Length: 256
Image 1 (tube, rainbow, N blue to C red):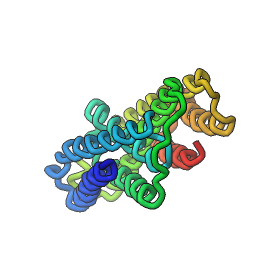
Image 2 (image 1 turned 45 degrees about the vertical axis):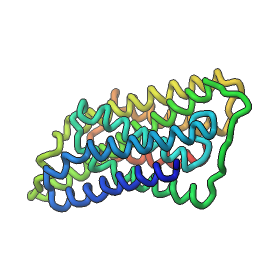
Image 3 (image 1 turned 135 degrees about the vertical axis):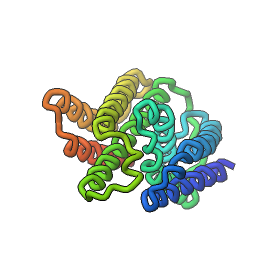
Image 4 (image 1 turned 120 degrees about the vertical axis):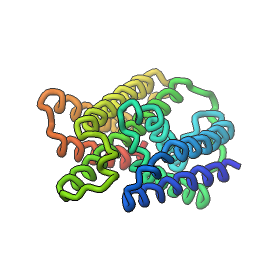
């Protein structure tokens, strides 16, 4: 049943993927209004999948690469629904759905090829659960920051074309986009800080390599935020940095 929920969630995000492609091609504002309903449907099936996997493992369902990808995807959708309208970034859904869809296709492929099955812990460590949950929620915020960076380059390209489409006029002003990106970076860094601090209270301290990788991601984002606050990085390099930083963070997932 958990596989079925994951497939249904992925099909929902496939609909979002198609919506994104159609929206970018036809630039129809009416299609964009479907972002939130699609995201909610996908989130429901994601949550059901994670609930069943959590019951199977008796802990937070992040015991293999597929579950980690689904949890990161779930975090991205949660962040979008919670912050998209508040940050005036309703179009985040159009741009984030393709990424979530790809993540979940990889997860499905992994689970069908080699699902390791239940991996129950001998004892449940709440600090470990907090560490894992906060860290992956941080990745959701970082992912949305990367998506906001992609939105900036799309908007910049439309502006330079001298013939922007209707989708361009539905997008927030660049100033709002950059402000939201910085806030997402701050939120993600704070969440990751909580996750790292929690790791030092765990019954078994994580391996040094795990701490070094988490620390490297945290330091990369903290440096980006501090440099921006001190020197005010121009929008284009800031957005590019957010995209590269998230790509780096994704590469570290397999080593965590």
